Image 1 (tube, each protein chain N blue to C red):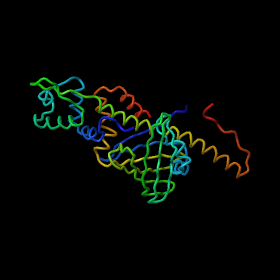
Image 2 (cartoon, rainbow over the protein chains, first blue to last red; image 1 turned 60 degrees about the vertical axis):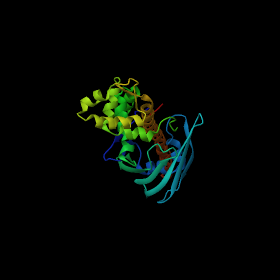
Image 3 (cartoon, each protein chain N blue to C red; image 1 turned 135 degrees about the vertical axis):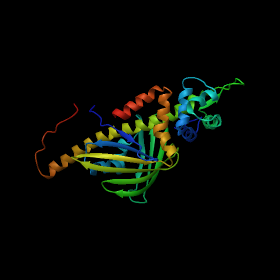
Image 4 (cartoon, chains in turn red, brown; image 1 turned 90 degrees about the horizontal axis):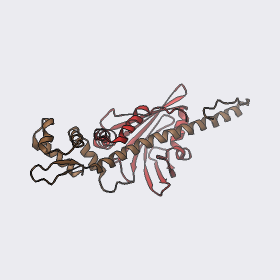
Length: 163
Length: 131
C-alpha cells in the first residue's frame, strides 16, 4: 500500500467536528466522487465487508439523498437528508440523519473542497444537534475511555494523530 | 447496529461533563464512597451526589450493597458501547478515504487516457506507484 495521508479531526466550536483530509486529485474529480452515485458507492462504505446497495442523490438545493449499507453478515444501516447548498466543484451542505440516530439528532454536514497544486483538501464539518452530542462522539468518550485504560482507544488516538 | 442495553444519548450526556469524567476515571482505579469522591474535587457532597445520580441513571456506575459506605463502582458496559461507537465512526472515515484515494487514482488515469486520445498523442507510459 502507498502511504496514507493523515486524517485530522478538530473541534473549533461547540457543536462542530471538523475532519480534514488531502487527496491527490483535482477538485472537480473529488466533487464527482462525492455526488455521483456510481462513484459514491465505490468508496463511502465504512467498515470492511459492507456494501452500499442503495445510493440515490438528487443533487440540487432541496433535493434529497438516501444511502443504505449492508454487511456480509446481513446487518443493514441507512441514512439520508436534504441538500441545502450545492456549489460545484467546491461545496456541498446537506442535513444528515441515520435511521438508528446515532448522532443525537440531525447533523448538518458541509463538505468543502479546496484545490492547490493538483491536490485537494476535503474539509468535512459535521454540526451536531448539541455540544453534548458532539463531545460524546468525539472527545468525551475517548478521554474517559483512555483514563479508564481502554486499550483500543489508545490505538484509536494513534490513528487520529498519525492518520 | 443499535446498542442493545443502553441509551447512547444518556451515556453521552452523562459523559459530557469534566467532573463526571474525572469521577469515572477515579472509579476506574477501584470503588469509592461519596466522601472519597468529593475530596479531590473541592465540591460539596450534594454537588457530587448530583453528578453521581446522572452517572447512575446512565448505567455508568452502581452502588455497592454495604449499608453504610455504599461505595460506587464503575460499570463498563455503556462506556464500552459508547467507545465502540466512536471507534466505528473513526474507522469508517479512515477506510472511506483510503478507498477514495484508490478511486481518484483510477479516475485520473481514465481522464488522462481520454485527454491523450483527444490531443492525439502517443500515451506515455505512466509511472505506477504499486506493482
